Image 1 (cartoon, rainbow, N blue to C red):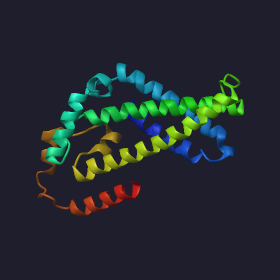
Image 2 (image 1 turned 90 degrees about the vertical axis):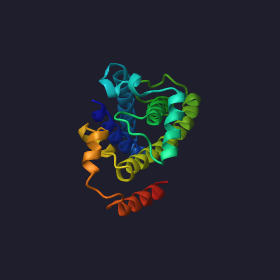
Image 3 (image 1 turned 135 degrees about the vertical axis):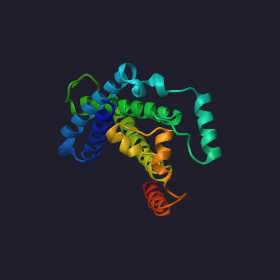
Length: 208
């Protein structure tokens, strides 16, 4: 369920982005917004009722754990390996869910007040919709920045730190420390990685 949620949200974001600047596709943009709200609502519920690594209680930590994780990562120049979400990513997940929720709600208010359409047509005034529209655009810019940062982090973790982050988002399987050591023990240090690193850092720089 977590992986289905993740990739459906990717599709919804792409659809919303591609239909955001075209008035003739406003209905499709709105449908994408309703779907995003539904997906976020599901993920919040799944964060309490889901399996171990999907639950907020398993990966959301306080500031002391977050600062400790960051200090270890800076000291060793790589983050400690975690099977689930690490403490920093945990707060990014919550932030992403929160911004997506704001994006969907302000979109619904805008659609209702400015266009007098949708499930809540006529419920919000035109003036309220104007304010909601401004917040909607700011939230959209913020979520694009967060998506770019997310993709960059996944590329770095996968190709620089040798963690199967991207593959695990598809298969649901991620090696523990022992299994990872077995997979990479035959490789000389840095073997075949310099070109990968150059490509990844170049992609990160371009996206940045």
